[in-house]
Length: 277
Ligand SMILES: [Zn+2]
Image (cartoon, rainbow, N blue to C red; front, side, top):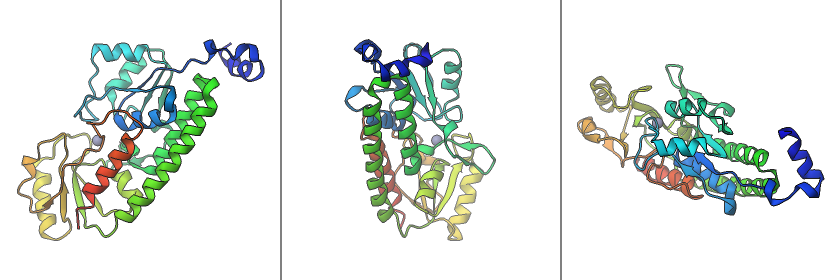
């Protein structure tokens, strides 16, 4: 019966009543994903986001009220297991519609072979995700399929405009490293001389050895700049000799999941990284 509904909605006006046109309540993991969903939903609804303000995207911890929101969701849109393990466990236990974005994405791997989950920092990926979100929402809420598709198309055009602006901005930069290895997709998108993160793999803080190694690379001229991160105390990095840039926030953890949040996140990152000259 479930499979027949879209067919009936398309062919029989009798079934195209508001009762069948319910906009799902959408739960998302992180602000940039919430932002992409908000763009696709437009005036139809607003998603909620699970990551706490100022939170680290790898340390999402679910409160009981959030577990309730997940089990009552009309759709959960999330990056995937490689970013938020705890949400993965929570989703295994509930029977709600889901969209795991990373599973549908051509991902980058870390040097150790693990999947780099920070794919929202690629404009090309963001455009693909807008399309996936519109398609999934349309399956659940076919009465608004045309609106979801039009909103996604408009948002993709806006991504292209921002992308062109950032391409022009991010030229002539010196080699840089960041706190953690989150910026591979961003760096690939703009052909940046990114030398990776100080904290490797799943580690949250750089070890003394990687700080010492950085000192060495700065002395040799292989690395010019170092960017700390908003979620972590940069004191550890004080004596490396690298030019210290502004703190980056790869997940826009202070942002609400409003339509403009993804562009704000990308613009801030670009403005920060563009200081490495
Ligand atoms: Zn990260």
